[in-house]
Image (tube, rainbow, N blue to C red; front, top):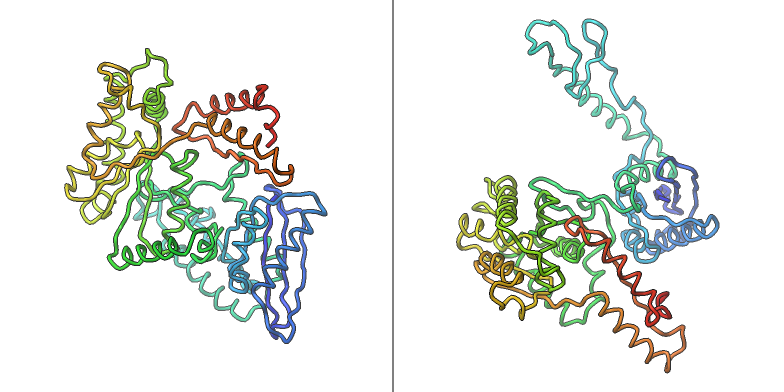
Length: 470
């Protein structure tokens, strides 16, 4: 379910009217208005947030519903700046903030439609009814007067609404939740991804989603020296106006994507100019890159090889994306673009030589997040050696190579079970830790469903079954 939340503060500030609208992703099914009164006519932002949280908790408990997302009006956020962060942290609700009209309309929202000579409406979208008028092009006429009338109508409406009566809070909440529903996909009620110009990933629905309120929300997650270091280096990046660009293969699913969404979010809160770009997907190329991963990890069939045809296809794919989106004037890889470039994982190293050719002096950092069997890549003629030679011929042009250690899921499960067996002898069940394994199928990982099935089968074995529910 989804919920809209809005607030109207009384003129004398003695109370706030909180409106709720409940939506089932098809239609609004319930509405509610609550009032929170303030002693001495002094509104309290924390008290407003607490009241909203408790009201939603009570509704969820009474009706046995779980809210996935919330449309919150910007006016309510002005009254209580920390309400969105608390919705996420305490209720696991994804909040989206919208500017919603707070006053009733006194004039029609749309101007009266203009008609052509035959009585058909002239649409402001530019999709027009054919007419044999003089000065037309291909039988279609452009009606600038209609576009102007739309602008004029909007201006008149805004001017007239300045003194209009306030809309009830539940009506504003309904507007907000209807907008919020559009930002969620039909599968699993996940927030939709936002991909902008030049295939730039726009985390948090291009900033519409607000799961943290300020950069201060992060302070308690680290020790003070770490926090001070973050602020120090962020200040340097701001002062130097350093532009950072990240490139990876997919905006969802894998570990890189999960980290990038979080990193771009915190960098934007710190005022750092950081952007993240992805290529247009290619199922054939992603099958090849997954095969490469399996080969490098030593888990592929020994007969599986990286063929010359696959190498050529791989190179053509990355070259096409670079030229179409990033190397043209104004792009992140063109002169005047990013000052520091990060390339993630073996899907994208083909981008490195193209960057070097366009901008030889720009720093390039390559990050590997997968396991590479160094013992196998040093065996001449092995599948691992062939894949690594192809990748390394491109990676070696980067300025820095960062390799991250990788633990496989079965190893993590085995380690957890061993820990639990020891702790079960010392702690009551209510105090022993649980293991949470999270994932989301990545579009560049055709084996994701296979791995998921293998993990479920592993948990059913005699050794791990007693802890499967943990």
